[in-house]
View (tube, rainbow, N blue to C red):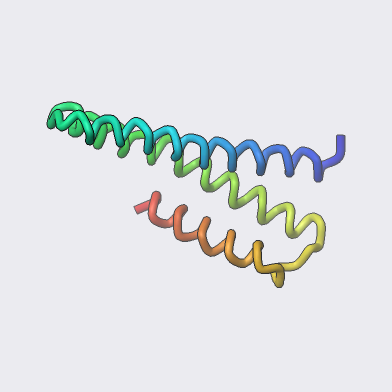
Length: 99
């Protein structure tokens, strides 16, 4: 197995966890808001803070770093539109989680 394959696997796995986790959390949040139960909504907000710091932050960082490493390893360059936009989006997400 090549280094490129490992990096690609890590990048895709982290991206799937990031996007899939966000989708699932939105489904849970929608149910909590529809229930109109203040305790449930309060618990969801506490969980959101915990999950954001422990799950989404690292998943975003791993996705970004593995993607960056792929670009550098394969000598693709950052002039591709998808690389530029993905880097900007990931940086915004990493720095918003850090604060």
